[in-house]
Image 1 (cartoon, rainbow, N blue to C red):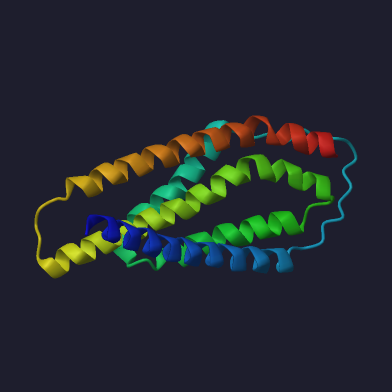
Image 2 (cartoon, rainbow, N blue to C red; image 1 turned 90 degrees about the horizontal axis):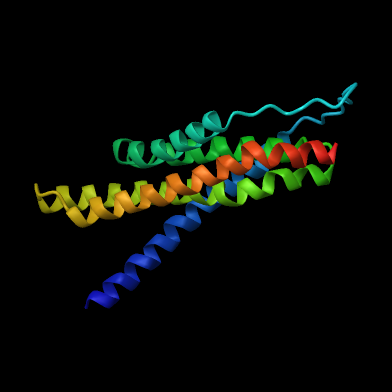
Length: 179
């Protein structure tokens, strides 16, 4: 019985994750389509200045909001937050001056975007659990849920730390190299 419940949970998670990916993909395409054509040619090469801590805390804040606000808003925050991030990324990609600049987005984006999607799924799992607790009139804290939430947060924060390192120290090198 336990194995089949686990299979059902994985299938539900796949559906939720797929919906989150769809929201992100549609908003990315909207941002890409609406991106202004940038034809500014800089007089000289300027260094791209980034702040590791700012990037890390900004991305952590997005994931935190996806997890914490989801139960409070019954998931209505997910399309808004994922949609905004998708539009921003789509606009950035759509307004790049050459294809090689896209290479600067890939190293950190390949970590960052899935972690934001995972954060949305974690928030929805917490919401589902709280709804089931309310239906069953349970008042006990489920320590398995808390353990999974802490484990998920550890994975998310660790991944976002490495993504921020890449974005702060490798991405500018790639962008400057591509100019």
